[in-house]
Length: 102
Image 1 (cartoon, rainbow, N blue to C red):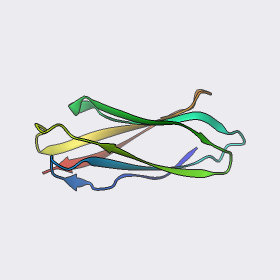
Image 2 (cartoon, rainbow, N blue to C red):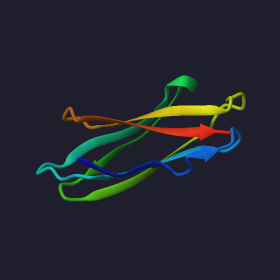
Image 3 (cartoon, rainbow, N blue to C red):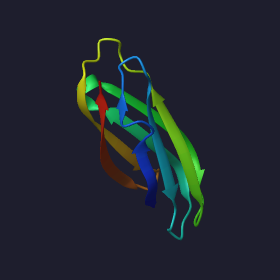
């Protein structure tokens, strides 16, 4: 599995805006991904959101968007998001991205 587009929709936002992560994946393996999931975690805020399960056939691509409502008490600063992609066959990929709250 390769990550195509893996980025926040907005890298700078205010605390009253939802955080949106765009995830694009391509399955370059010979086997289909069954029960795949994508999870976005913002550890500093104690937030975790998952999409899936979904199927990603061999040679195909898929895009998912995860929308996270930020707590109203979220303070300005830079935050790290952890993005995990996994499936029932043991695939587990992890990437990190950052965003800023003004």
